[in-house]
View 1 (cartoon, protein in one colour):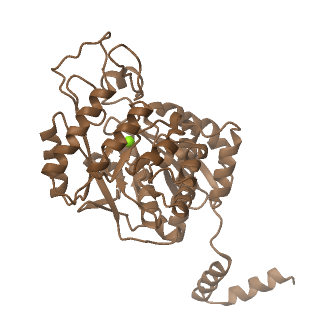
View 2 (cartoon, rainbow, N blue to C red):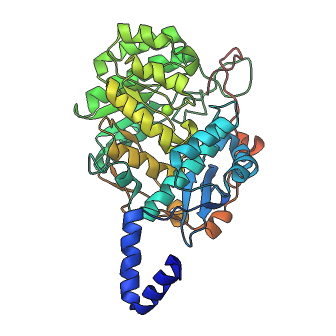
View 3 (cartoon, rainbow, N blue to C red):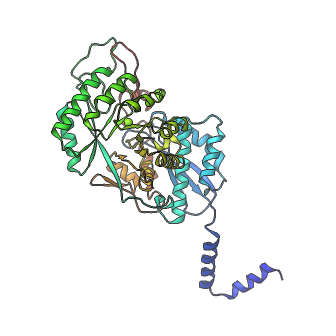
Length: 444
Ligand SMILES: [Mg+2]
């Protein structure tokens, strides 16, 4: 009789509860069984018009699966193809519990890397694997990252209006809800201001018929907005503002100096990713706190800004950088160099992506602020377990993984392309164009 037969006889003689206890003890010693990736699928849903992408990974273990945000709303169809036609065949059969290894394999397998489509596809996989690990451990992902450094994520909301008094009213509404930080953006009559509706009845003379934007007009009007905010709102209210990289580097430098007196919490995207070298000059000439990075896809963009301490807040869009795995490394890099986190959190991040943001917010010592976009009732019906907002603080779901279950049947009822108007409808969810008076294209 060999050893296995002997053990079998011994086991048969034991009551079931002893066997169960032995199995539990064995699992505790050996760790959890390693799940394998059985299937990779894509959930494409646009319940509010914005195209949201979520990757679902199922494993060979019954009921063990996970979700990850892969939302690149302006080129959404391409991410679906990248996941279904390239990552799925690459991943099926691989272990589901080697997250960083899987990330490195996906990242390197395309040879050319750091682009928005492939990074989003990888993010969907990466976050789904973190969800799986959390579900397997019976813990929220923030626990796997070391546990909380704070109770909840302090957030800022978006206050806007066509005219300055409307912006002030909008700020007061956020303050009434408990927000301590608010981003302010004002419209420009007849122009396509970023972050705020303008007065469409006013017509601006231009050499074309499309949306018009003039950087100098924006700057003058925005300085007036800050003056009004500081005059009319409590001094302990923290103000943020997004330039959205729409002005020239020299204008950005002048504006950053001009807003110093308003003591902004942060001044966002004053320069384009194409103009990173200007941050060295800006840093030497102004103490206005700079937030940058929502357009970043590559470590070549964020690494020098952090390592040279040229910015105050890193604003990376987690799925655009490739998911939780690279972004926790960005957060740790920032901690070493005194750069705080302010992960991008607009409406074109799925609730899974917002959950990943909060996991980072709670577990990074150098957390700065979290951008907040409200979840609609329909979104909450599809993504059951969205993070909760109370008093300007966003709370993580305490369930295992991201704590979110996706109602996949309901998600299917809102395919890409529904509720899209104008340019988005014409360009398959993509954006159109904005030009200066003379017809020169400017950055969106
Ligand atoms: Mg922004």
